Image 1: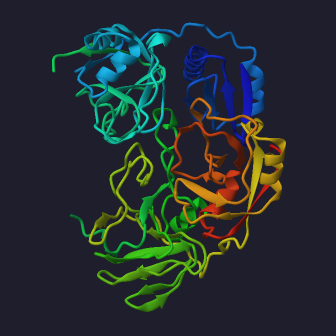
Image 2: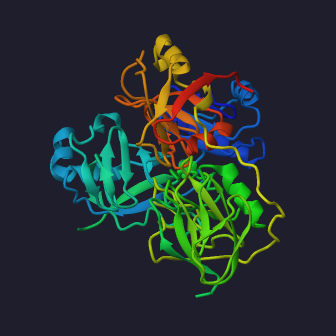
Image 3: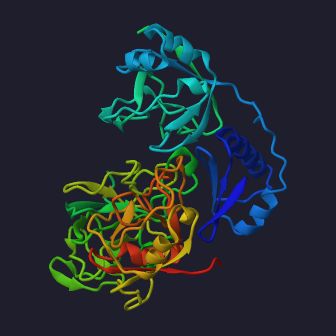
Length: 204
Length: 289
């Protein structure tokens, strides 16, 4: 773990893996809920957690070094289930990259248990990890100017679901009717960092 | 609809509703948004007797024109500009009474970029995640003003301030941005960091609410490529390839993969919001507080 000061009131904690970043994120949420940590934003990302709005970042940096962080984050909450029609336009390309028949993509993808590692790109866009490393895929060479809302997509080690239509370079493997973002809901984002997720194949 | 409303006669180049933004949702990919020149927005609210959270209008370069349906008290601040009511000059930086149906015109900025209009009662569009701010990156909040739109107003809560003209800092002739290096200054050569902190940059016309873009000497990288996506803060100085340093303003993305070479002090961002294209920019290193 390495802590980098960011401006006057933030700290970027760099971990050696995405799993460690998720574990630290869970620990930070636990400590904030317990009243042991006062912070404006806790922003997890691929291998870092940003703590913004700290009154004494250097003191927290010193404290962090002494924390005993459970390796496996607690699994208190039920997995969020997202029904998917595996009918994306890039399904054949992904099957080729994985070296499996086309219909196997759905089975492999739906068998994995995912966790929302972090959000970014757009409100409610989660970067989900859970597929074994061998299923990493590159982004498309030419991004699409408009990816439809509800597209279930792959890039690098991540699965994502587009909350609304936007440009995008991810490989589209399916479609869901789940509403990823609705700011009128108590929880605007269906997928918040730390949430567990499963994809359920449904007929197209 | 209530008669407490503003009719938009001339929306201007880009006029948005802004308040103090929606911080606290960065982990969901939601930018903080909010008035770029926060002290100016706070001042016009104070002048019209509003609470600090009230929503104001933020104009860009050429102002806007509005017609209130009922008599309202307003104040214009931020970038200095002519203010007229039915063609008659009215003060800038002080409370102004605008009769029902009269035409309030906020003219082009004489200096600076963004003027702010505070209205007693505040602009009362529906909040999203606790804020009425228009976020131009993610599209949250109300759309930018359009000719013919109608903006509801809240009820005034306090009397306008008794001032003739409130002192406000003028837009900068040279923009001096105090920075603390890092978190990714080690992704640049030592020469590049020195270049950033000693050479002159200037404000690019491609600047917007997401970032103040600058043009100037290139910054050579010690480490090529992109970082895995990581959280970024307001004031972060990000350096994309083939471009000058970009200072992240209120509508900045919550995560990014280009290395952040330094972070600008929050107190200097209001001046950044008022720096017109071509303004010289100097980044100067300061120690952490």
